[in-house]
Amino acid sequence: MSWRPWPRGLRARLLIAFVTVTVLGAAAAAWASAGAASNALVVSTEDRITENIAGQIAAIAPTLTFPPDQADLDRLRLAVGADTMVRHEDLASMAGSGPDLITGELRNAVRTGNRIVTQRVDADDRPWLLVGMPVMTTSPDGTRTASGIEVYTARDLSDVEQEIHALAGSAAGTAAVVLLPATLLALLAARSVLRPVRTLRDTARRLASGDLDARSAPRGTDELAELTATVNEMAEAVQTSMARMQRMQDDARRFAADVSHELRTPLSTLTAVVEVLATTADGMEDDARESAQLAITETHRLVRLVEDLMAVSRFDAGTAVLHPEEVDLAVVVRDCLRARDWLDRIDVQIPTGIRLRLDRRRLDVIVANLAGNALRHGADPVRLRAWAGADQVWIEVVDSGAGLPEQVLPQVFDRFYKADAARTRTPGSGLGLAIALENARLHGGDLTAGNADGGGARFLLRLPRLEEEL
Image 1 (spheres, rainbow, N blue to C red):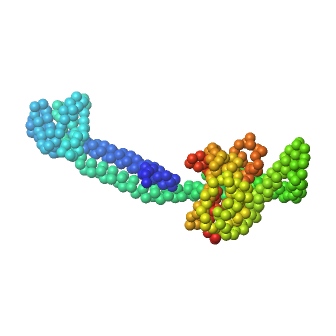
Image 2: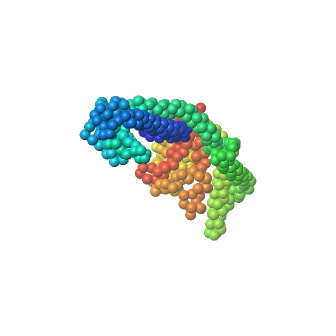
């Protein structure tokens, strides 16, 4: 079994698509919300820290002397807190690990900008917020100038990072919680969508199986309702066409049966006449004898056609019945060939002792038709052989001609079909093989056509051997 990367069922595909879209939407919304909340948390923390440090510096700045000494720098560092460095020219006061994190970029920004500058860095697997600001002095006229004192401090943001991770985890949990209701909603949506599809599928199957009365009631006004209405219209059109075709076929069969039945009586009279004519034809003039022979031949041909039409009519009407009797297959076949003077022209190979129950008259019709076709349309030698199994008997007729063209095989048992359309005056009626097939099926067997391995047409008759199958 080959692995399929994508399920083929419409329900599975709808379910996966719906759940995927829902979960992705929920995850995107949760991720965006968590990102916005995290950014707001960081910004507010930075603002709070910066304002706190600025307030501490502003509180102690008026007590400093300018230029400051080392004691002033130490007091200012202590006021700001741990991890702080205070510098003024060559003097510096520092404590903790914060001064080691101060970057040159931050110091340049503070010195050149004379403003509060912040920078986030990672050190020792922890996030830090670096804050640098100059200490400003205010002149009597209100002008603020940098005093030359620079304060740098570092604040650990691990608590903020933990809060951000908690927000992300909450967002992921929210997306996971959405999965179950999304699946349930997808199942409900798939069920509502697929219910009319299943109904339409069942209707199509009933139509395909021959139930032309099958219909689906369209519900709503959506595309599925339009499709259902279209299928109903198609089924109605097919049913109407089939009914019309059936009526035409019934009429044609009834016409053929009626015509053949009506022709039977005058043909009987005509047959009697031509038989009398045949007995006197030898004493006629040449032209009269030739005309008489033509009339006799055409009359016999017409009689055979009518008989074949009546046989086909009985098959169509379902009135053809079997009269089975126990027979010896070799005897029946040889009697058939002997009656038509074909026994010397056909190589017959039938083991003795093959006995079975069948309709002797109908087997005679089948064998006569197959052997006659082989002699008439094939080439010598013609071989007929039979063999028996435990519950089946096979009869094979093979000629040595060119065989049946591939395009002829599907139609060889069709009524009135002739492989050579120009050969319209052949002795056959075009119904022989169709009648042979019907007789085989009436026995519960079958008749198939093909070509032998060495060339030549090959017909194989299969008949059941068990009595209960008759």
